[in-house]
Length: 236
Ligand SMILES: C[S@@+](CC[C@H](N)C(=O)[O-])C[C@H]1O[C@@H](n2cnc3c(N)ncnc32)[C@H](O)[C@@H]1O
Image 1 (cartoon, rainbow, N blue to C red):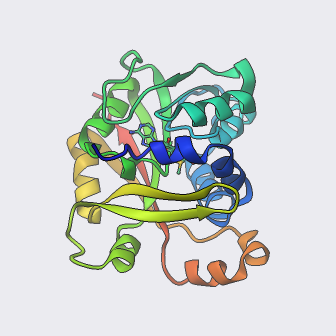
Image 2 (cartoon, rainbow, N blue to C red; image 1 turned 45 degrees about the vertical axis):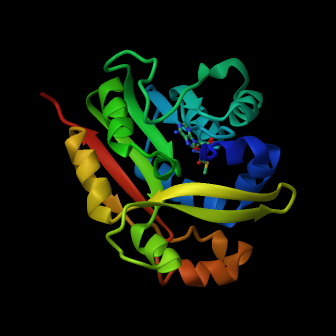
């Protein structure tokens, strides 16, 4: 049996947390762009789907949200619990499988850099749609389809599982499995799940990246690395 996409995160553990804390792509690209897309969260019930080590949980809690979170990786959940303490209910659950939350339970769902790990993205989006109240939003980030195509080659239109090799400074080397798909395929899955695409964002790096990693800053000003979708559960 091939390893699950989250087993790499179990293996990386604290090394992934250290990487994401101030890493070019997490701290200076994904999080600032996602938090800008999410906007004010004061008083909202927010679900962090695939919360990882809890950087979004901390930011959302600081913004006044009432947060809950889940992740498939036990190691990531342990780190998230250590980060936010008892402030939020955190559980082990998987995108792509039924989620143990009531219908309409959340005003906002956040899913950062995780949907590309899920084979059945349609089911994952369907469950996130179910747990949102009508008028609620899902804001997700993922790897940009064009960049995956440029990195991996072959047909842009291929829907296929690919492997990246990550070598984090303190975490050894891991094979990280992910799904590539064309933009239309992800947008179709969102629409089929019942979402209206409110906004498509191809983020530019945060200004802080210019000093942190000038080379990647220049690259990401020329071609996208990630993609953000803001998806609305329509009122019925
Ligand atoms: C790149 S990390 C992002 C973590 C967090 N969202 C962030 O941006 O800081 C991807 C996370 O997705 C989780 N993951 C992968 N597949 C998953 C699945 N099917 N269900 C839930 N979590 C999953 C991993 O365990 C990992 O914590």
